[in-house]
Image 1: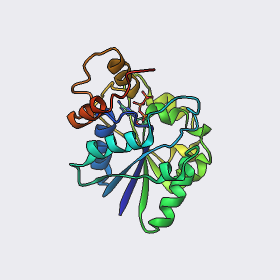
Image 2: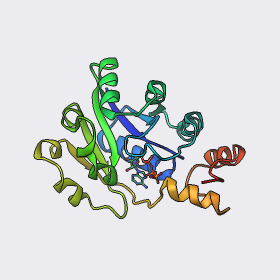
Image 3: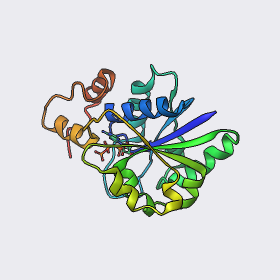
Length: 198
Ligand code: ATP
């Protein structure tokens, strides 16, 4: 089984995430993509995030119609700062026969060597990297040691310059977020009055 981990803050999930996951799935015939919202990102410990339950629920709504997509609560339940290394280790134990992949955007790859145990992660997982508009894959690759670079597989993806922060800002300003994220996610944001304050 080919199992991919796709971590992020997902505050909120949007079409950039969904296309990246779908195109990664298609590129290497993944059986399952697990969307894993972080409890607290190691690089964003001072930032205020929406409640885990909101981020999980929006992910469930966004992925419910894709048979290959699943949402994992593993980092939320572990609580505290979420390290991908711990998540990879846990999923490896739970799925000893699975081939593991990690899905990420170029911006995230740029900072990969600052993660906990990057070499061990790259040994256990192939890194499926979707090029994100405004970020150069070559620059990100040059910052990696050869052993990690070997584990990287670029995923050609439809360029979508969508970010969660731009969505939050638009909501705060009372502007439209239609076509940036699925309609059921927009409805959820409105119902729960998310992102209206800083
Ligand atoms: P924020 O704007 O709050 O920083 P974000 O939109 O970057 O959020 P994250 O949850 O931080 O979303 O991202 C999770 C993963 O998805 C990261 O690996 C990131 O690189 C990737 N990603 C996010 N948006 C896109 C996009 N538009 N195209 C390709 N990859 C993306």
